Length: 620
Ligand code: GDP
Image 1 (cartoon, rainbow, N blue to C red):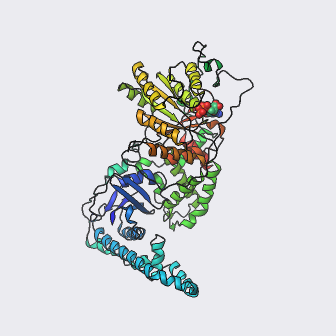
Image 2: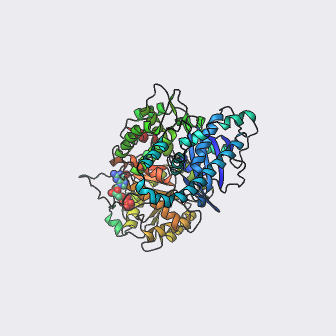
């Protein structure tokens, strides 16, 4: 049984829902589909699974790109409804006949829909029966197939424009999950238009869906909260072995470089002379370009192409504005341009799986659109991709840590950040850079040495603490890091420290005991920010690291509302030239924003991500 069918515009205006489907949806599957799938450029996927307490839905959708309409069907996952694609295609066809941008109510579509649903169900049932009967017969006839088989192929692959309604066409449509031309012919009489004439206008009932909520989704500052969303498992690249990179020392090391060995420190001598760490202003507070691009160039170009204000247009922005002209874009038209774009993204180190998904999503958003007479397909595709990349990389929630720190302070609590990530990526170095930046904003910081696993980790952090002249909470090794973090936070509350930066043991995403300890630390201390520290050097491994970290945190959490990664700190950005793809891969896979970019070995070498510049570099 179908749970709901909903038709809405790209701007978020709900035009029609099926009022006959009385069961109220549990949770908010449509909102979640938009937020976690369509807005994150996963619209090329074939379906989306949504889980909420007491509900497990599958959602399917189709677009009418030229009219800017979205059709979404929701059904109980357990039912494996075979006719949904077929039904969606028919609904799309019929609704587009009566759609008028000035109209907001389509009550007259109720009867049409009921009829379409009956037909789709009947066809699915027919299909099921004919398959049951045909199966043994097919086995016997398999050897005789010859000319008959090819005739059937021809017929099902034909245009269907003659209105033929042969079984082979039906078969193909349902098997492919597509509404085939045979079906189109069947409903060609355009019932919808007739019904529309007989019943004009009516009040718009939008049922359980809140239009303003949909419209606000784009800007909403939301974390994943009361629902767990299971996405189709992503195929994972074989894991590369990660090795800690040796640091290259300059012939004449400068004072400003971060020093990672401190023999005096390692002995734990507290009377060591402290090097004041005043190296100038942190780059975090400078508006600067991250890539090698010239800033003005990069920004101007992207701005030019994306001038249309996303807010004005709704959450799908200008990508979907109609293009005057008469050439309808088909998938095959888009393929060469998309293939070239995919290759380009991969040369910039974007994980293959993600480049692929992005291209599918862009294709899904352009197919069926009218192309202006003088518009090149490649530039249309490029613009669509550019906007998709901007949408992905632009944080959907606040990443203003300074403001959040002050808010926590007003509540009399320290703001707690937990740094997680695999060994050697630059966790402790960049933790120190964050501390340095916070100090420059007159925020008092305490470090918590919760890597109680790797020998030398506590000493390394102590070195940074001493150089920055900030307190460090440490309990040595082999202690439960969750308890150490808890005591550190208590101590910070007593001392009125504004921020606690928690260093944790570097762990491989597959290391179950260490991941369990991390999950416990997060669960027990409920930090304000879980920051994933990852190297900008990684390609396909970025997907593996982040998705497994998130998955493990979710699996190992004792709480139903597991805390996942909230933000990303991308390190070693100074070493990658134009291979900026890891930024995209990591954000895409986790949905978390890049909050800091490490770009060197000095305390000042921490920046904000320049989204426009990254997009420009990715597409160059
Ligand atoms: P951890 O094991 O994750 O704590 O990693 P470390 O903080 O010990 O850093 C590992 C190496 O990466 C050190 O040699 C750091 O100097 C280096 N490193 C960290 N961040 C950056 C960065 O942004 N750029 C460059 N070039 N090197 C970095």
